[in-house]
Structure formats: C-alpha cells, structure tokens
Image (tube, rainbow, N blue to C red):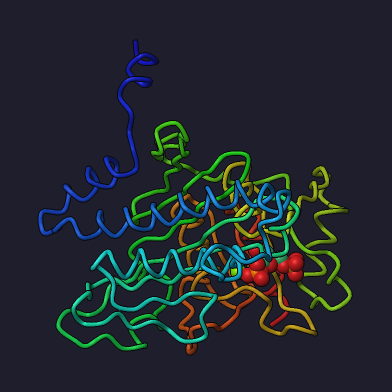
Length: 336
Ligand code: AHM
Ligand code: MG
C-alpha cells in the first residue's frame, strides 16, 4: 500500500530539510529557518506571477495604489520580498541580488552566519507574455568569528553549502541541493506546501536536446560553433539533437536536468564573458548539475572552480548531461 502511504505521508520541504540536518549533530536548525524564509519568498513570487496577467487585465499594473504609490514591477517587488524575508530570518549576514548594485550587509542585531546570492526573478523578457520564469539562489557561510566581508561571497561555487531554484511554470517547482543529491518539490496550492515530487534527481548521462540562443551564432567562437554544428549534423551516425530554447534560464535548465541534454550560454564577440552572472546564475545551476551527475564548464575550466572578483561578474557556461559536456570540453581543449 505504498501508493496510499504516499498520499497520506507528505514529505514537505521543511520536513525533508529537518531530516537532512538531523544527520549533522552540530546543526542548530539555522539552515531550516533560512530555507523557510526562502520558501516564503518563492510562494509570494509564485502568487504574484500567477496574478500578473490578471492585474494587467483589470488595470492594476502601472497605476497608483491606495497609498498613492505606483505599482511596483514584478522583479522589483520580488527583490524586496526576498531581501526582507532573508533579513528577518535572522540567519543571514550578506545578501547579493541581481537587482541591487551593491551587496546588502545585514545589521548586527539581525545577523546570522549565512550569505545568500540570488536572482529574485530571472527571465525578465518572459514576464509579460506568461512564459515560465524563476528564482535562483545559492548559499555560503561566513568564516567563524570574523566580521562579514565581501570576500565571504567572492568564493568559488564549490564552496556553496546549498543551491536551488524555483520555477514559476505550469506548476511551481522548487529544486534544491544541500550537497547530497538533488530533490524537486512541487507547490500544492491547496496546502501552500512544497511536497517532494522528484526525489534524487539524476540527469541522463547523454541527452537528445541542445539549448542555446542561435541568434548569436555569427559572433560565436570556433568550439561553440563546431559543437552546435555537430548537434545538427552529427558525423558519427547518431541522430541530430532537437533544439529547445525558452530564454528563461530556470526553465531551460530544469528541462535539461529532467530530460538530459546541454544548455549553453557561450561567450561571443559582443559579450566576451557571455551574459549569465557567476554568483547567482552560473554557480547555483552548476552546483545542481554536478549534484545530479552532470557537468558544468566555462570554456576554460570547471565552472564551480571559478573565483569571482566582483559580485555581478559574468561567465560563459555550458552545462548538462555528462557526455554532452565532455564533447564541448574536448572541442575547447583542441583549440588550445
Ligand atoms: P535576465 O536576468 O535579464 O532575465 O537575463 C537572464 C536570462 C536568462 O534567464 C536566460 O538564460 C538568458 O537571459 C537568455 O538570454 P537571451 O535572451 O540573450 O537568449
Ligand atoms: Mg537574471
């Protein structure tokens, strides 16, 4: 009667993380509290995203509300909600958001040991047409004892303790890794709880899909151009890969994680460092890929080995199924 047990014994994300943390006797429950505040932010954004189309229809967006303030854009609103939730958790000391030029240093009375880097609402070009968008986050911890410094977040991605994303799509899905595999939770709107629906996600070793903005092809470097050519015209008798590109990193990476394949945002002549941000886009997604058995590569090195010098730094990224990333690595190695 496993199916029945499944329906009555709900593994919520909080229960899951509590179980995980109880394996570490030194754990003080801080991480569970931090995660609960992140989850709150995700639920808020999910609800706001779901209402966004409606708000437009009944003339809310861009108008002034009762307090006489102009309605905030969804990405600005989401950022405020996350910053406030994270500060009030009492467990954070440094916050880096894509929306804020400077890092936020939490005031001493509210300070904890965690640093959170995040993109509150990624995929901005997809907001107004109802296509999937998401939140991406990564979590570091400051060194014991010291005052929080920017260097605490300018660390390689392999030092992250946890990373995840929440996708606001046909359902709201939160994918999380605390460094021992990857798990997916789906929001049950009637309960307001994220329930474990995708335990121990493993990415297929090789995929049938590639995902890239081909509109940039004329500016690509040799290895990227060769790789995409191989996807379309394989010379080894294997079938050509299908192209899937949404233009929302969370949605493109989520599909890649579940179905296998490769996601590329390469460097090009116009953007020599690519487009995606190291701290809150490249690192969390690379962390999840490795934890799921895939790989993440920058064109030069393992993505998680990068040491960022600035909080909004960018990097090219190739991530996905192990074998597919091996191929692109070989093409870059042949260039040298
Ligand atoms: P954003 O932070 O302005 O939303 O940009 C990030 C997004 C990613 O979600 C996505 O992978 C990429 O930009 C798509 O870029 P492009 O439109 O150049 O293909
Ligand atoms: Mg972004």
